[in-house]
Amino acid sequence: MKTIAWDVDDTLNGLMRLWLEKSFLPRNKRCSVVYAGLTANPPHKILGLSLAAYQRAYDAFRLSGCYDALLPRKEVAAWFRRHGAKYRHIAVTAVPLPAAHKSAGWVYRHFGCWIRTFHVVPTPRAGQVLPRYDATKADFIRSIGGCDIFIDDNPENIRQVKATGAGCLLVPAPWNEARGDIAALLRSIK
Image (cartoon, rainbow, N blue to C red; front, side, top):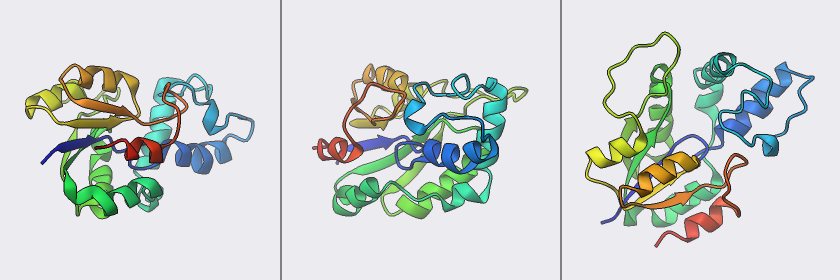
């Protein structure tokens, strides 16, 4: 059975769009940036924020009830219902460690029938000192002996994991060069 490793935020769900539209923009009425204008991730410079201010705002949203209420992407949920049992699935996320429990709970609540393994490569935060087991998602993929398919919205993660020998799929997002939609990407999984 082939193994698919899934990124969580902005792959299984649309966290960045939700945060921008439901949290950041309502609090920053002078900002005219739309989701399609987020051509970098993290988008702090585009939004006129320092990296630390962006991380504080994004982390607060992750830890709020808004993240708990976040729905999976419809196309991804439909793909899992139709094809999920044909593969083994793992979640590999780069969430800050204080929010990992929210992400894990979300994954198991929505995809727990199929995704049975959850791994965090913690995104560092100022002043936080953690043991470092895996510096990147590719390090983790290597540590488990690889995967067959890796799906993520971050081009650098894709580049690094591709070097492990995995087939990689880049989820279309304004901050990457992938075109099309996620439904087409999911149809390409063989």
